[in-house]
Image 1 (cartoon, rainbow, N blue to C red):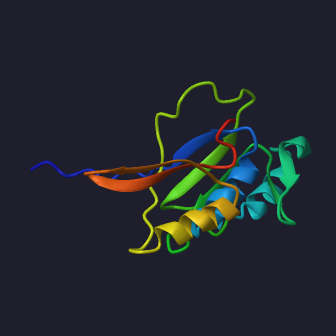
Image 2 (image 1 turned 45 degrees about the horizontal axis):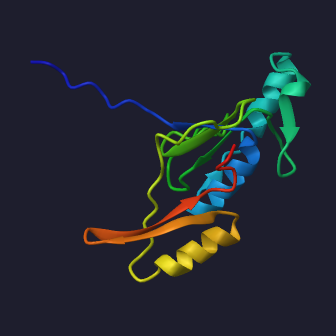
Image 3 (image 1 turned 180 degrees about the vertical axis):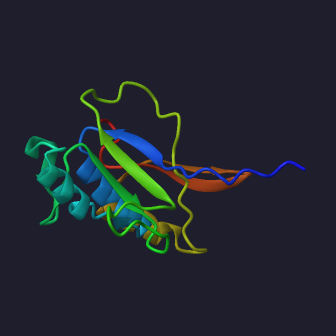
Length: 150
């Protein structure tokens, strides 16, 4: 009898020129939490395993300069590192701007009757409406996050 392997842990990694700005936007958009990796950052700095130049002050705590994640508030996380163990988006700094169409996007689903209010809320966070679609199969709003051109 073959044993079924355990599901793999995963995270969605998103390239960004400003990962902390992206994390703030998506944490607010999804009602997620920005991960607090400050204990891990401080431990790595103390051990000499992480140079100070690889860190930034983010919301009054030390953080990695080039990486930051947001996680679902109900999912488990490692207390020692602050790293989420469930639904996560990880933003990593890249030097080059975006040059092609995204091959991946997130579909956000507002509660029934609240789409317009949700679109307005996301615009208030810095997103922009690209187009509104209405066709026989349904209707939706295509939006871009604040760093869509990066």
